[in-house]
Image (cartoon, rainbow, N blue to C red; front, top):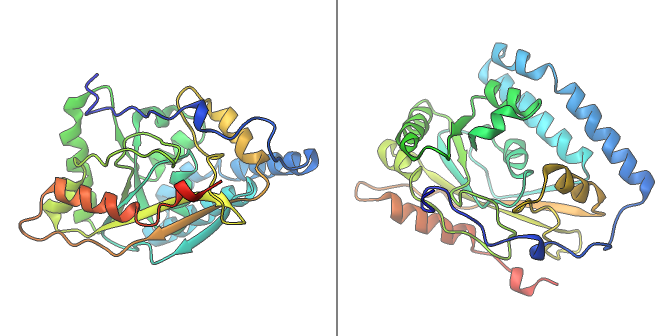
Length: 270
């Protein structure tokens, strides 16, 4: 597989907090697990209901459900800046399986996700109902079709959210932004909104506890998040980038990447 098409992360178990660190009590852990199950059960009708709702009402329902999942697993959401509400390519760094939920909790976005997500229980059905644009990472020739789908969505006044790193990183280490999907913004003149996602403690100290890396299983990562005592995710929306007539996708990707990294203080974290 061409690494330019399917990036690989250098992050792995060595990036995660050591086992035996701070954890919530067994009672709190059980309560969070129960709350998560309840929210997931409440979400079962959504794949049927969402296609029947007007776009604005659908966005409200999805945002409420995403926020409910974050509350259930004990993640505090902090929003800085103004996430886009209409036509924009929203680009963010990628750390965790929580990231799409975080973005859906703050913006009425159509996500771009790997094709495998369509097979996940419940989430796969929600993905289909929510108009997620699926990427087949095993077929490089499908990339132009993906860009065309993003272009069409932007032309229809949608917010499209993408993780241009192409895979998850722990946050201390990061990946380069791949430029392909930025072509859709160039073609349509849609603004590009860089958004940074930072996971930390209530004290402001950064943490990798939410990272979903390498051979880590989804269940192992979920358990780690459920056990985290004071996990906060800070969403910072940067100033929109408006591509000019001479803009290129590579220029946009590089500028957006710099904007997302603007307040990266991982080197100062304990």
